[in-house]
Image (cartoon, rainbow, N blue to C red):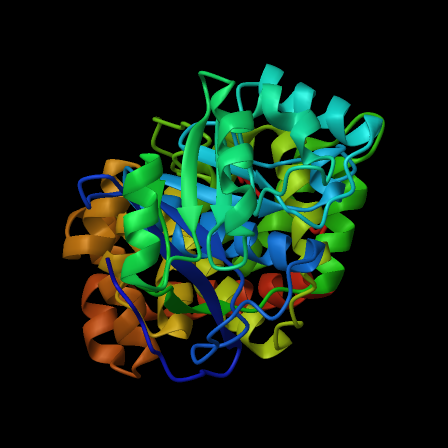
Length: 416
C-alpha cells in the first residue's frame, strides 16, 4: 500500500481519503471504514454530508482504486439520505462494501423503502452510532452490522441496546469509539464481534495527486449520458477530451466493486464495459464533488501526446487506439509525478499497453521512445526510428486536434 505525499504540481491537486481499521476478536484487521479528510493533516472528518460522501467514493474508486485502499478486505462507507433514498445512485456494486446509515439520517418511510431496495440489490447495511429509540431500530431487520459508540453511549442502557440488536441473528455488533482498556474489557464482556477505535488504531490519511478535471466537461458528459438515445460516439469524444475523466473511467472499470475482469485497449471499450448508466452515476458524483477546473494548457499537452501516439502507432505495427491510450497514460503519469509502471498497475490494460508502460518493450514501447526523444529535442534519435518530416507533420496535426478537442469536446475522435 503506498502512502504518497507528493508536492502539488501545476494542473494537479492533492486528494485524500481517511481509513480506520476495524478488527475482529483476535485482533486481525477485517475491514476499513473510509472517511472524508480535507487535508493530509486533518484529524477528524470535519463534515459528514453528501459532499463528503461523494468525495470519499470518487477518490477511493477512481483516484486511488479500491484495491489499493482496502485490498481484499471489506470497506464501510458512510451514506447520507440522498444516497439511501435513491436521489443519488451508487456507482459501484455490492461486493466487499458495507453501506453505513449515518445517525443523522431521519428514518422515515422513504428511507426504510430505500434501504430495503439496497438490500434487495445485494448491498450490506450497517447502522452507525446506533441509539435505541432514535427511529433507527426500524432498520434493524435490514442491517448486517450495528455500530455502538462506547465513548458516548449511556452505559446504563447498554444491556437493553445489545439485547434489542441480538434479537436479530444476522446482526454483528461493532464497538466503536474505543479509547481505553475499560472499553476493550466491555467489548469482551458483551462478546462484540468487531472493534474500532483509537486504542486499537487511529485513522490513517492516504494522499495522492489528481489531474484536475474540467467542470464543463463533466456537465457536458452528463447531458450526453442523459439524452433519450445516448450517442456512444459523443460520450467517448467528451471523455477522451479530458485526461482526468479518461483515467477515472479506466479506474472505475478496474474497480473490485464493478467486478470487471476484461482488459481494455481503448476508451470506447472501457465505456462499453461500464455501461452508460454506471458512467452517468460516476459523472453525477463528480459534479457533486465539484473539483477545481484543470488548466487548459495541461489538458492540451496530455491530449497532444495521446493523439501523436495514436497517429504514430500504425508505423510501429500497433493499433491506433492502443497508441492513444499509451500516450495519454504516459502524459498523465508525468503530470502526477508517478511512473508509468505505477499507473499501468492500477488500470485494466491490454497486455501490449501494459508491456510498453511497465518495461518500455514491444511496438508501443518503441513508439514511446521515439516520442520521448522528439519531446526532449533529440531529433537525431527520433529520426533514426522515424522520418523527421513525417514526425513533424504528426506533431502539428496532434497539436491542432488537441486544441480543437479542448474547445469542442464533441470533436471527432477516430477509432476511440
